[in-house]
Image (cartoon, rainbow, N blue to C red; front, side, top):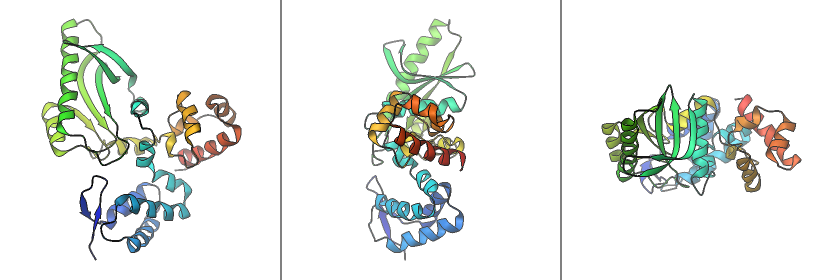
Amino acid sequence: MAFEVIKASGQTEEFNIQKLVDSLIRSGAPEYVARDIAKQVENQIKPSMHTKHIYRIAKKILRQYSKTADMRYSIKRAIYMLGPAGYQFEKYFAEILKAYGYSTETNRFIKGYCVTHEVDIFAVHNGIGHVIECKYHSNGGIPIDVKIALYVYSRFMDIKKAYELKNEDTVSINKGWLVTNTRCTSDAIKYANCMGLEIISWKYPEEKSLEKMIENKKLYPVTILSSIRKSSLDKLFKNNIILVRDIADIDEMTFIKQSGIDISVARVLKKEADELYHNT
């Protein structure tokens, strides 16, 4: 029987069991397990239920099958935990870019033609400079609208014009980016495509979305670890440990020393990081 559910944005849509199955498969659950879980979830859903409640039901059942898959299913929530300020999201996305071959610098002041701008991320790849503005939200109900896209593009053009007039830098700036952990309105995407502004959001573009960039190289934030607590997060961020692979790629004693976390807690986090990064 068809029924509608309420998304984080407040909009309603018809419940699609295949979308739930697909998300569970992406988390690492075998297809037969994903379909079984989705059917159990469907039996518990009531009309006009919020998708966040559906997520919690699915996550609870998934955890019974696989702790690792349960963690992977939590990627979007883990990114929300980077907040409430957006600074950690900027650092996190900079780490993602590094994994794709970019050199990055966060919070750099760059003199434009008219004014000086503080750029969230300045990235260089193959001699080309990319001016990147990150827009972070701690919940999924706030889309990025066309006004933000206009603002980001105008800043990029001011910087680009200044670089072109100087004509003395080895790096040419020819790409502006708008990156968000939520979604963009259709007008924002339409404007960006028209002006050549790169947009990276949770589900867009399909093959280079934030979700895909994370999953393709297993670039999970440390907030995805199920045993993580705020006190541990503060220490990890302070010591520039942002990705799960930062933990998984070093031995236990090195991690304990670098993180500054209590030994017993560090060992639990190290075990979870190894399971998530090396065994999926």
